[in-house]
Every structure is written in structure tokens, then in C-alpha cells.
Image (tube, rainbow, N blue to C red; front, side, top):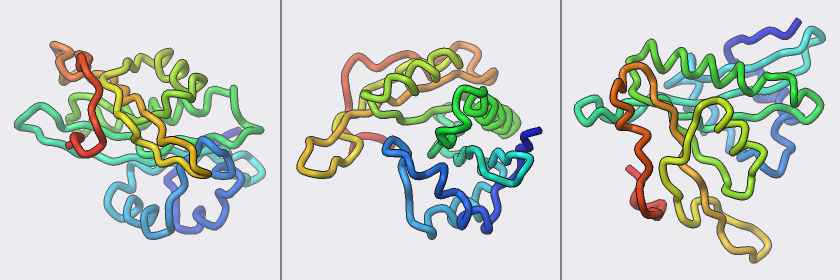
Amino acid sequence: MTSLRAFTCNDLFRFNNINLDPLTETYGIPFYLQYLAHWPEYFIVAEAPGGELMGYIMGKAEGSVAREEWHGHVTALSVAPEFRRLGLAAKLMELLEEISERKGGFFVDLFVRVSNQVAVNMYKQLGYSVYRTVLEYYSASNGEPDEDAYDMRKALSRDTEKKSIVPLPHPVRPEDIE
């Protein structure tokens, strides 16, 4: 049976099978450690019975309570190719949403490549909608142009009027994101 547990420092040496995916954003070790130190409850891993890591979610709580922008943010969600289509991503998202509810968040947000239609459709099935398009959010390599992102959101129970998910009528640039 799959176990869902807190991500640990040792997992940093065991999760290459998950990160070796062209659509998964990878970061330096200090970035992962920062998340482990500041938001450990938002860093969850799925582990197979044999001990192989199947997937993980990494996020944080951020924003302003006064402006009704306190929210959970999904920084990374990835499932190893051999464990996809088992509902792991949905379960990891559900856990992050529950944590964000307990912390009094108004919504959960995430950024996803516009071209990653499999992920966009999955997030829509989980109740997320496109809040805005962020132009040239993802840096490209090999001389390709930078790629746009969708900022997708799902309102939580604290946002009774669903104000946090009203789509913006125009795209924004990365430097315009708070």
C-alpha cells in the first residue's frame, strides 16, 4: 500500500526518478531545504511499499490576510512516470488543500505551463480554474522563446464569495506578480 508521509532530507537523495521529467521544475538543494525548514507540512511524498518514491508535492503558505490573499501555493507537484494515472497527484493536491484550509487560506494557487495540457486538464478536473496568464513565466533553453504559464486557482471555504478566482481580463508579466 502507498504511504503518504512528510518529505525528509534523505529523500533529496532518492527522488531523481521523479524529477527526471522535462515538465518537472527542478531546483537546487538549498531551495528544497528552505521549503523543508519553513513549510514542512506542505512537503509530502508518496512512497511505494518497496520504498521507492512515487511522487511528491511541495508548497507553502503566503500572501496577505488583510487583502484576503492568504493562500496555499503549490510550488511543485510531480509523479514518476511509472506511477502516473493512479490518482496520486489528486491525493497529494487534496492533502495540500486540507493543510491550506486549516491554516485559514482563501485559495490554493499554482503555475503550470500553457503547453502542459495534461496537467491543465487534471487541475481543472480537481476544481481549479485559470485566474490569469503570466507571459514568459518559464525560461526556455536551446534558444526557444520563454513559455507562458497559467496561474490556476481553487477557492477554499474561507472565500465564501469566490472572489479569489474571478479571472483577470488581461495577461500579466512575471514582475507584476506579488
